[in-house]
Length: 134
Image 1 (cartoon, rainbow, N blue to C red):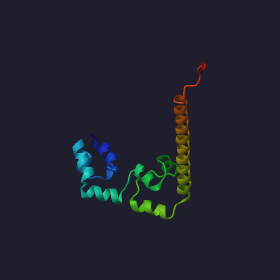
Image 2: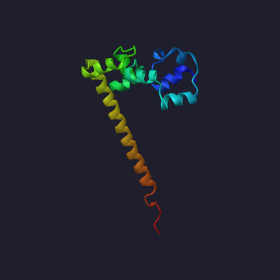
Image 3: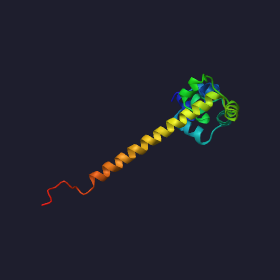
Image 4: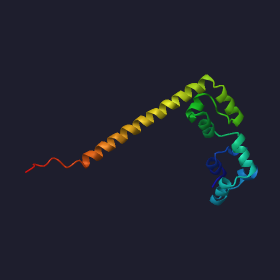
């Protein structure tokens, strides 16, 4: 697979990886080895960053769109992310609230759909009433 794909699967920023990783394809076996027994450069990168947007969004509890709305376009290090969490700016408070609302709405819809499915299941197995009863 391409180095870009492998970096995405590893949750790391390709530009921060060693040149040899960036310049050669990664086999599935090599990817599995990197995941199960990461070399020091990978462990350090995962621990300290810089991190890709998806990792930043996850650590901050916001969406990738929320990062874009806030103007966060560059990778952030773990220290920068921790600083934002310790003293959250207004945009982060707003985006976390927005994300919580989205999660609550998803739960509400899932609960509604589960309730509807349960009713359909009860109706389908509910005794077949509808005959003449003769």
